[in-house]
Length: 231
Ligand SMILES: C[S@@+](CC[C@H](N)C(=O)[O-])C[C@H]1O[C@@H](n2cnc3c(N)ncnc32)[C@H](O)[C@@H]1O
Image (tube, rainbow, N blue to C red; front, side):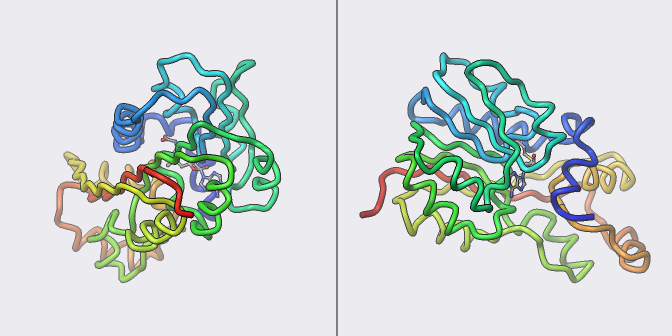
């Protein structure tokens, strides 16, 4: 299963498996330093961020590479949803002549194949980016047991990509999500769309079930707020 498909497959019941995403999306919007009127959102999913926007907007452009997610997102004359990959040149062509008060992204940019390039393009269309990204320390004990590297970006790469174009404020937060049983815990990983990994082979999965002795899952996120553009 590709990373992209791991979101699509669970698109319809995604909203019941995204507690951490819901918490960070709320926090991201709560901490905005102003209320932007023209917004570009990257990796919009089913609309977690849009649901937290309580003020009048002029234009909201939401991008997601999963068609199923795009179908679930609210649309109206101010809200346009575009199915596009934020790493593709098609996406850069769509935004290149536009200006946005703010680019927002929650729980999505950790999947970028070239975050530095993406931030470089975004710096041409906005002065403000507010984002929260999961880091590679998410599920760190699982990675240790299975001896697999995280498929998502690490803290340093994220900070470097943003800092190349903007002076930024970063805030890192760890979350622990508790479960009553191992079955529920492993089911959550599969359905949350956070892992993006293909199924483990039988032997590794067995080792993981045997050796994972925590009753919680580990998440690490980094909040990024750009302050000013670098010249
Ligand atoms: C964990 S979900 C978060 C969704 C939503 N922002 C939220 O806070 O609930 C990540 C979303 O990013 C999208 N995504 C991942 N990689 C992408 C890419 N390269 N281009 C566009 N969207 C992408 C996925 O399809 C998915 O909807």
